[in-house]
Length: 154
Length: 154
Length: 154
Length: 154
Image (tube, rainbow over all chains, first blue to last red; front, top):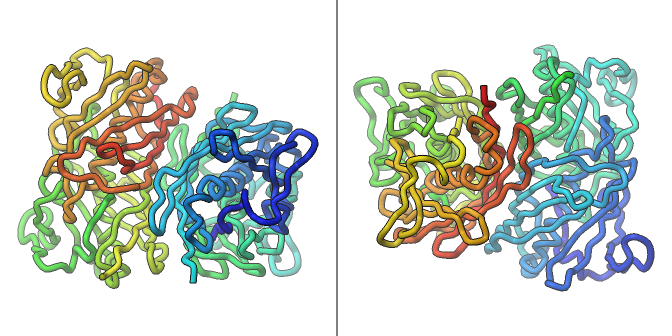
């Protein structure tokens, strides 16, 4: 099951990048697939209160055709879901992805910054629904939506 | 766009594993995300003519909760789509994933062998529809379906 | 929310058709959209224990191009989900469709018998996952999958 | 296949409602499932150029639990897709729904006005991707996304 503890952006251990292209963005270093093998993935809160996530495409992310592998985009989007839903997961011990849907809109290339923007479409007692769009250098590359299932606090 | 050249199983360069747990399975070593950072992913043709794909979960694949990251499962399923559809993509220069849908059915853990089985539900002139199931040590962990868009030969 | 009480096939009020093309199939007459405006939809249990659903296409079901409207197929599939899942919903007061995904594989025409076959891919404590295929006169016309959310007994 | 001729809002035969709750909205009377058995469905162009679709829930639309059947919402959303995409389908002879995905966010009740708002996320040469939200009296009741496949002009 695709699982993330809630509230990654405001969590203890979160570090702020101080230099380079992602200065001002935050990361949470962890010994996970996201961090070591697909990421790092960055996040920041925009002035309007919404969360934005981003990563920069490098050689590791490419498929046999030389563009970003769909699996990388889905991994990144799955990660972003939990950032978008974090306020609505505060009453839960965590959450897992129950369903994930995507439409591939365009290619992302080496050197592109891929950004995720999204929103909660409905926060229920046990399910939280989220949707979003990935862009690569500002051009749409994937639309996605998902249902997250809360893990109850014991 | 999630892209793969067609016919990975029968392609030049395909190597057969000769020892260990995946003896008899085939791999295609390539400098890609699948191979270096998420895989290796194995495939074999069963006696009934269908294709099966598999990989073994290791520490790299885990998320913050210690189970396989949903992004890994989606990357592997996206890879398997092209194996299942290879016969129906022979008239194309390749194909890309246009849409991908998944339901997460159960967790996969370190040491599990995750297998993908699936089928083409319809092969059209420009779109090929595929669906499948991932199991982890024989227990369902993800259902998925997708539309692949053929890249025309020039 | 897309909602159905569980166990339609074995429910009180279920009637068996005794003549015509659907002799031996069962229906549940109710004052609903399914029954009065889209159906009637039939169901029967096959010797292997699985449930099959069916309806016959008439003029009412057509769209502007003269083939069955996608909405009719999705209504019928949404209905069939609850037949396929009925054994796994016995411990619940009912269930609602939480997510529904479909791929349109081919057209259905006036006079065709559309059949639904499917299976539960995973029955959890609160979510039941189902997938299936619609055929029109034996040819695939839609693949679908869904997550049903149980309504707890009070 | 779910099929609609493109450009319903600006098409010959389109009529403007002159009185009642939907005064100023447009309809296209046709002998179809949408019109006779599920609709009528209304549409209008808002000052910002976007298209909005709507219908009013009556007894016909209800399921066994007394709320709007999920099939009605999916039929209406499938209809709305073609309104949202009409500008991007002008170069085609028409289009069909290739894939449709939905998340059910909340119930719609008798007497509610259900509205559809949406957008094209990407218009390609053969596929047009659309997403949207249905609201019932202003509250979210379904999120949806789809891939439309253009029918080539001969």
